[in-house]
Length: 187
Image (cartoon, rainbow, N blue to C red):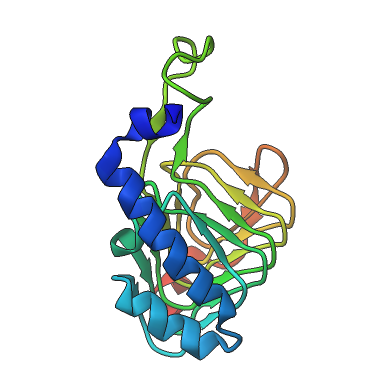
């Protein structure tokens, strides 16, 4: 009951309805069916997109209308996408298995003792054209992954990246550029 009071009746009803639709979504075994269904829910999804068993959460906030996935993108199994704020995935992006894309952080209820030290935030996330996020990669709220960025498996990206570069670690750090800067327009 506390959760209902905290988010309000309108968001609670929206949560219930969308939870039912998510059950329908989970029954769809073919990626193409998932794409069509997510478009019906308001997501903007391009051509030739593959969406495996992706989990969405906080869909009662910004929801599927805040989700954009560009052409020729691939989202792997067990990836989790936080729909509290906008998520924009550009063309030719690959999210490997178990990637976590966060658009908000919150320690709990409004009266949680840590709220005064860690207030909730909600910020859009962008993943640029031709990027790759490795297995178990984490993208934190407000981060923009620049075009052509390779994020190594298990990395946690806490700040914006440089174009055409390799990032690795926890937190992810710039390792090196992966191509000459004058080639940037060719991807």
